[in-house]
Amino acid sequence: MSKLTQLEQLQALGAPTAPFRGISYADFQAGTYQLDGLAFPVAVRSTFSEEDGATQSFAGHFTTKLQVEQNEVEDAISEVFASYPTPEQQEVIVQQMVQPDYSGVLFAYRGGVWQLEMVEGLGEQLVGGQQTPEQLLLPKFALMDAWMQQYMRVWDSSLPDRASEKAVMQLSYWAGRLNEELDAPHGLDIEFAITNNQLYLLQARPITTPAEKEEVLTSANHKEILPPYPSRLMTDVISESGTALFEYYQDLDPSLGDRAFIKMAAGMPWINLSALLDTMVHWGLPTQLVCDSVGAEDFYRVGLRPYRALRKFGVFWKVLQQQLGVRKSVKQWIATQNRGQQWEQRQREALWESAPAEAFKQWYAAFQKLYVGLVTNMQVLTGAMSGPVGTLNKLGLLTKVSDAAKIKSAST
Image (tube, rainbow, N blue to C red; front, side):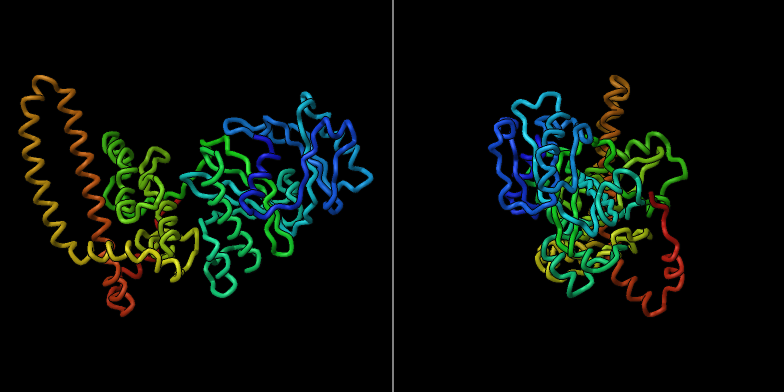
């Protein structure tokens, strides 16, 4: 996909972009191109047809000219066309220059944390390594969140001021919208600029490096029930249960995307904190809630948004019903598991003699199912206890819990 096609798609979706024109090589050769409506200086940008594909990118291979004045346009266009393998049937972009207060890039991965890098001034200083960028994990915001930021502290970021926070929150909204609309299997690499608190999207190309997708992981409650180095068998059981464990949240809210509750890092299973943080943001709840429950650092710092939480009333009603009946449901689950495990064990006894590999396969599947059920019920119990425990702690009746809460889990 060419940059020009990307810009046209952004424009069609109503995304904020600076005015631009596409100029074909034929029109340039004939001198029939028009730049009416563009204010100078402009940027003359490459848009080779194979420059930004879904599987590979040629970013930086072709020439782009910035700060081009009207008397320099023809030479700049000629130079960009000359950088192509062949200019025939190709185009260049002439786009009105944005003089940014801030510029940068957002890596909006599907099924991973969104990573923002931002510098003051032109983005060339970021690419050239002339400035150390502001780096942060960007929550997935809605347009209403960005609007409300000017009236209430929705997001307590490390950015310089609330106006720049609002623009970056708008960027988050558009990243989510574009991920839904554009053909980008692994997510989007979005270049942006902010000038006078106005957001401009300069480019949105498909990410071609899915292996660089990251999550924020925490040892959290797992360190209480696992030895420092769990067996290979237990490690495999836990890591392979990651997607099934997140289904607990998807059953409460089918609009949540596919994530893994457990991820592997350094040979160990870790709880995927970023998946839980994204769930809190999606539900309008403070991200500190989940961090307090697992003893982890709050990397997002997103507060309560009642206007969003009200839309998730059905989800919270399901949670309340679960928690009110949690004692009875857990007892029933334990009794059912006891009966079921004993019956399955008897069924496998003969199989161990005749087909031990098949017997082990069946046992492994049953054990994995048991583990998923155990951790899911622990999540329900933890949720049911969090309110009463929090109240007792605020009353000063649980000083040991208060002291323990100050010790954060390891995160990576």
